[in-house]
Image (cartoon, rainbow, N blue to C red; front, side):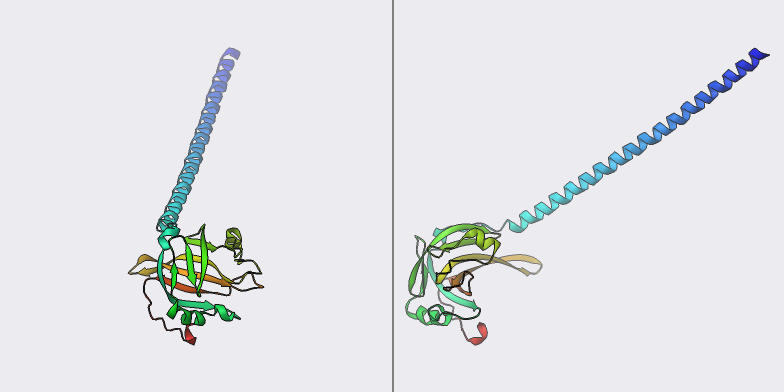
Length: 218
């Protein structure tokens, strides 16, 4: 009888062990599935992040793909005046309206060796590099520093007065949902006692466009 009970007990114990093993197997399967699901989700998140970053980089590359550095030699030629902007007091010799009068007898030009002729004087240009989509040329002797220009509004030494830089600026407009880049040429002007520019004169290649510089244009 005892043997029969022992055998039955052993059977029950074995069944319990089997059941326990089965539960452990089920728990193990659940953990494995959960782990796989987490790994898959993490992989999907990483893939999505990579795709988003790739899309962002691609868009940035597409946006900047039209921006190419302008060579100094490509600037050579005659220029006409097409506008200006000034802030605060303006030195008489650098008044854009004065430049308009000077231009009649002494047009603006850039020579093949990089000399900007403006306000009846010659200014030597030097390539500084790019700032976003803009190509920057400093004027020798102005104290222009590219890093200061990028990080602040400093464009010249305090004891310098005159044109200090030529910015070949790429701007954008949308026409029929299409991005259309266009180029502007701005000569930054500074006066003694100030490292910031007080304004700029806009020039463009080719013949005079007969720009009407009345007081409302300022």
